[in-house]
Image 1 (cartoon, rainbow, N blue to C red):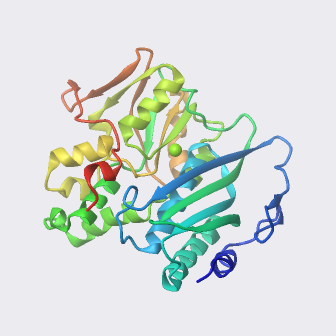
Image 2: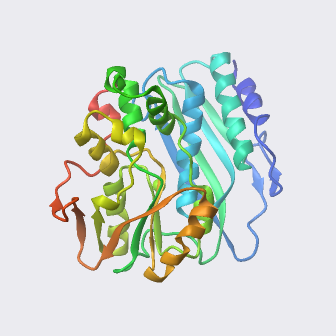
Amino acid sequence: MDEPGLIARLRECTPRHAGTRLGIGDDAALLAPPAEGTLLVVAADTLVEAVHFPTGTAAAVIAERALASNLSDMAAMGARPRAFTLALTLPSAEPAWVDAFADHLGELAQRHGIELIGGDTTRGPVVVVTLQVLGEVREGEALRRDGARPGDLLCLSGVTGEAALGLACLLDASRSEALHPAERQRLLARFEAPEPRLALGLALAGVATAAIDVSDGLLADLEHLCTASGCGARVNLERLPTSPALSAWPDAAQALDARLAGGDDYELLFTLPPLAAARIPFLEHEGRVDISVIGSITARKGLEVLDLDGKPLAPARRGYRHFAERGPG
Ligand SMILES: [Mg+2]
């Protein structure tokens, strides 16, 4: 498939946005500026074969993860996504690969109501997907990392750790032999098709004092949030959510490590002023996801993890190491 064919294939797969004056096909796209009192939100993310996903990963999974990681950044800002650009590097544009990639990207773009407004394709030694997403947020309501204050409640959507164990299953199928097939499937789906928490992000806009999405690992991303806010945090292990699949994982230490430091879950980690605790059921309803209060923000800098007996725990690591460092499987 040649480059014009590839772009034509991709352009037909996403919905049109009302604010787009000129979409794909010219040197650049033309967009109407956001409405008065609204800010434009921009994020970009790159996925590289053998670094962010194993060689041979299905095209649909690559499309899913590329879009989800970018939409998760929009969710973490409390933004509503609007459009995106795509820069795609491929060793060869195999029609079956491009079809599967475009079909899946189109399906997701439809689901989230976002338009592909431009991009670029190049030939290169490995698959590299760079997406840039544009969104909007009401001025003064964006969820930043630097607004957490001592005494704030530390909250987490969903559960962390399942995506990292899903990747572990992909790299070594024998790891999951002891699991029920439904639990194994759950872990794989959390790695291959993460759900960006966009509805929760919108509900948190103007409510949460700070937010970040958990892409690098719970403790690593918490550290980013605390550093930006100039404070510390305490995490109570007994309040950290778990799941049947995490509990069934045969190596309990590895499961705990995945929950604290696994990465790739794309859950939202956010802080609420104590008085906003009463709003959590509403936020769960709006965000269509469970929320756990896993700890609190402290004036003392640094992270403290308390184990089930309330004693300080020293986790083996805080965050994601690119899987290339672990050696691609
Ligand atoms: Mg992020």
